[in-house]
Image 1: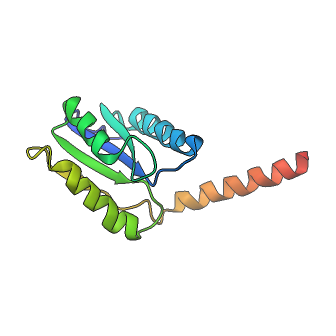
Image 2 (image 1 turned 120 degrees about the vertical axis):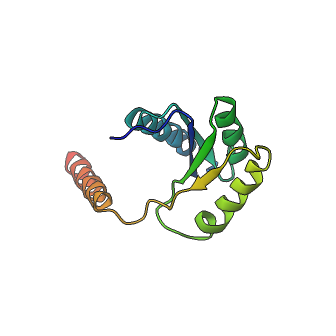
Length: 132
């Protein structure tokens, strides 16, 4: 896998939740992505309901030396949040750092690997039922 250049900061953005376990999951995803991608700067962020916010993650990336930011929309499909809210919130966060360009990814979307993950979850569910 091609590594991410060290001057690129990556922010993984999910919706955010009132449940700490859900927010902690994004932190784990960010760590896994950092390990797999060889990225030096990866930060989790929540669109709402929890910290770190997109603005906090953007500032943290810049503080670590990021000269460009890629915001990954960690949503399954396009919708109001991924197509309007996250771009707007990111634009507002970037105003503090006029020399740091940013871009946003598309949501996860369709990928055959998603069907494999769904299949694995179905099988896990069936195994749990058999064990009960």
